[in-house]
Length: 384
Image 1: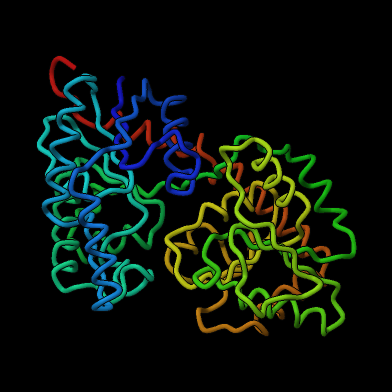
Image 2: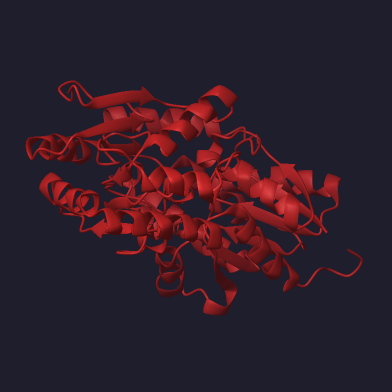
């Protein structure tokens, strides 16, 4: 089996799509067949689209979603078609890119994967607010064409799958819901993880991993940490991935900054942060799924996050963490974290469940083995 793995960005880059492209391709190659990268993809119209979006954002305060414009989507189709002719693959796998598939003309069976639909992104993610009406029109057309064109579709959450069925009228039989995995080259043993969780010490170490302070709810996490200390809980907050704005300073906050998993040293630093932490907190404002939830589970960390987007497919309330409503403030987060930390039996139970959830489902081996079954159900053209 030869799989053409088609991505807009470089799939060998562990930062590309938060590392999903890299770990997904690696797991496909391990379990499903010879996986050949088709990407990064050049497109002669992207730069012009990017510049136009910058101008309209500054001058008109309107955003132009250039990647889903027909001109750029058609150029992607042309580039992909020329590339797949050279590799003679059996199946085309397209993750995260309706603009890559919408106008693609090929006889190859196509697996389309996305963590969200265009409809769900509009007015939910910051970039997709205040779009030009034509961008909304083109985005809808591109998504609808891709869903219709795909032979089968993989979504990582019920949230995304449900919208594809209800909004885009996709047949449920065409959809497969398969959870993503943790983007980790090194996974600690269950024994090492649980030894740490059963003896966590007295200091509560809260960890937040995310590149966008505002969208990831950094202020809520910060104020929850301050509140916990006011209540007499010895708590600290470690921020990894972003820099808090001015005014968010405290002796109990530690800012690590962005860690690049392409660098072995920085990858090890991230592993150490997960292992040394007590609870993973992410009061996110918008989230398709969050690979960090899978990573937190690998390290047996209870999760306190927001019930939004596809998060509930990864954090099961009361099992491996707790989800709070989007309107919950820092005091509600402080209450829930204090409740978990103050009951050692509950804490250890959540830790055990988190690690078990990673082992049972939230890993890339599990994902790829399920995708292998999806591929087996495809009709491969005669002669392939």
